[in-house]
Image 1 (cartoon, rainbow, N blue to C red):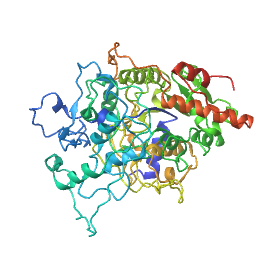
Image 2 (cartoon, rainbow, N blue to C red):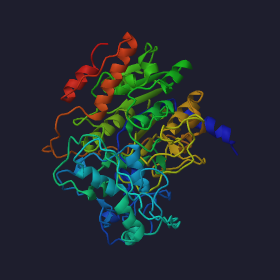
Image 3 (cartoon, helix red, strand yellow):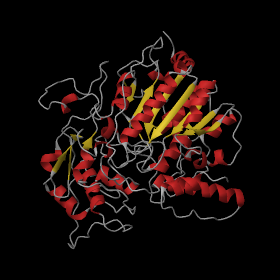
Image 4 (spheres, rainbow, N blue to C red):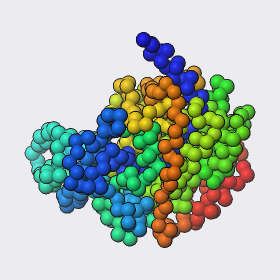
Length: 537
């Protein structure tokens, strides 16, 4: 019988290249909750094998009975997004709240611990979205619970809950009434640029079905889907992207830091004579380049690359694919990042283009292609993120006291390789759940690199997903076409939050290079922001 060490060596021999493409702001249930549950097609189906893959692997998807209360205590049930709606690929019709405070309310019904007694987890998504829809003023401080006027102190009765119990019948009970009366979601402080007509609180419970996402869903079914993969921080985009590149966000929970000085996986690879590439769709300067200061502030090493997606395809065809490649989508309202409320169908087309480029190259058999998402973006998920995450360092904590010891919300992660059996639902065999740093650990194991922080040191790699003895020769995506969104839907031209963040990172680099203290200018369109980003500096 092969030892664990021999098995790991065998797995390592199969993969010589890793490619990761990270999309934006979608939860697992929102994109893949119905993957192995076709009851959404016929609600009268009484099947016992829902949420089980063809290989018999259990799958933590939706049952269709999950609910969330609105501000009146009405139960809002999850539902499949209507394929005939004008805004099908723009759901949930506006950008939900996604910061640390919003995420805490979505998951635990409160802004700070201790969370609400008697309230089941993951019950604040509708209320948080309802608050965002109704928001009229920006930058208001979070609402605080009203202080009791009673002189008698009472200790709330500690209650337990059954995670499989339908709490919709309890939404009018005293615990929930108290919650509605005293606890409200925080104000986002972010201007709402785009909100489509008819936006409603129930939109956040709308879930995409496999029919609507044929590329993501078929890749998930034909290779491996990770149904317990979490973003690294229970908050928004930039801290989670920092964990993807550095296994730390340097104690930051919000998007206030636009570039990071911690050592990146790219520098780690270079220091040990391995190659990397960073490419962005339709852009010559990926955000990741300026986001990682140890990349931006050093000459690009030999056989490492920074460029556009076309440049990536050239490296595939010329036989110069780096050991590790990170791909970005194109940002903003006309891009394909899939950020709410931008075009999800455009991201489907980009996924297929990436898959086909790798599948048709000579690197197909020795490459692990990964599709993941940086964070949940305020979209509903029914699984509560686990505690027990290892902080990047023993002293890492946010100024508010968060110690980075809890994972963020589940997000999609698809592992693609001809060494993977179709129908695989992949979960780590270790005790630590999968998160972004599991991919760093995979790269470190493959290329014999040291860990960046305690978080990736504790993570499990994903190499044991490669279970086949022979590489597959089929192409299960042949003939599958991406969907197309309604072209009549228009989003106001604006510099999106992440485009402005990239511009700030460019300013950071200019200031480091020149010793000055320049300020990023105001932008009135995405074109203005991109012109600034691509200036010669």
